[in-house]
Length: 208
Image (cartoon, rainbow, N blue to C red; front, side):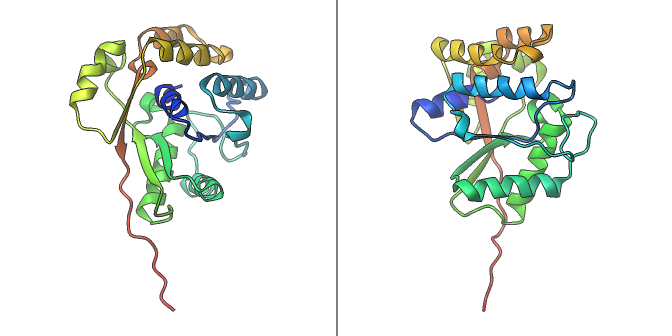
């Protein structure tokens, strides 16, 4: 739900957007329903089901208290990158936007891949910037701040894009608790995404 502005803009530019989800969201035993909701939400945003991959692994539970294996997450992600020859990967930063442990584990895994030179040369890695609570909930009024601050990528959508992002969010009916309605109404992530580059280390060189 945090990446909607970027997905919408990339789809408008006819980019081939894929989504990799590392769990079925089964924390409340609603995994099957949440899988359907995710596919419906992606369809609204312009990502067909054929480009959505949902991982169901017993060692990657949907649980904010679970500690995901960085090596396992790294393995899943790098295989997906290589299988599809992606030239860009968008993921969470070290604070995971909402502070969710699973989001943070994904960032650690991608950072590990970057620092150990396991990502293809032509693939750039970008992390979605987590902003403070005040900036997070002033909606589009946060735009001047994001525009002035340095970032590698800034994606902004207007009212039409917001309506699409809202429609996509509403697809996640099992997650629409009262505070998520506030998110839809006031979060800057419904309008604005800013990204920073994840630095990549030296590639593994082999001399024969």
